[in-house]
Image (cartoon, rainbow, N blue to C red):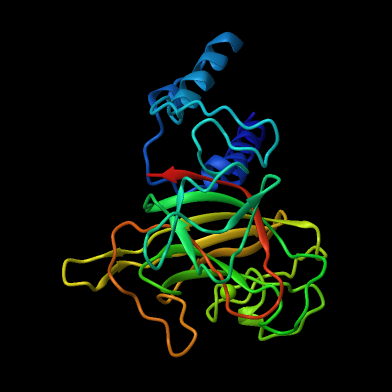
Length: 282
Ligand code: MG
């Protein structure tokens, strides 16, 4: 009898030591549902359901967005910046006159003599879709081969702002922080996902605008995530300031800004764009 009792005590003690519950150092008291000993399997199920409820969130309910017919087509809440018909959403940067680039056959083509164009509207944070094409007859090399640019925020005339580089980087050597999908002279793309000249390239970009204090100092920096033809090329990259041709990047205070497309001065044949849309983010 005495031996049986001793074995029972040892077995119980060992079981307590080796159980996961006994080993855990819990800082939060168990919920009432967890401490109750369920009398029946049904009661046990009810206790688990009550515990599961504790981590459910029911509000706010996300807005319903109807996706496009393809993942490239604008969803229901997008602002279409170019649908192939006209440049009504765009102006010429230098004098704010109607954008003078050519629209033909559903495509807009850079008119280098006109210069850069930008959106009439200004934006802060957004998701952007844009398609671009290097012409098959492209010439030149290095930075002089299909150079253009997507300025995620145009903060002034010329090339002021934050540029996601557009270039023919299909078998075209250049400095890597200036190849296609680089944040110009700040961030080398994670991959070269170029298609051949003549084929459409796709950029999908998430832009988090910088914010500034009243004195002009940076409150929060800009971030960019970008996909080139579905391949991640910029992963939440923190910008050091505006993208400059010469010198170190610096921030310049702004609130909202247009999106700009570059008419680069290199002598290679001009590139084209189509299907541009934006979804503003809070
Ligand atoms: Mg450029």
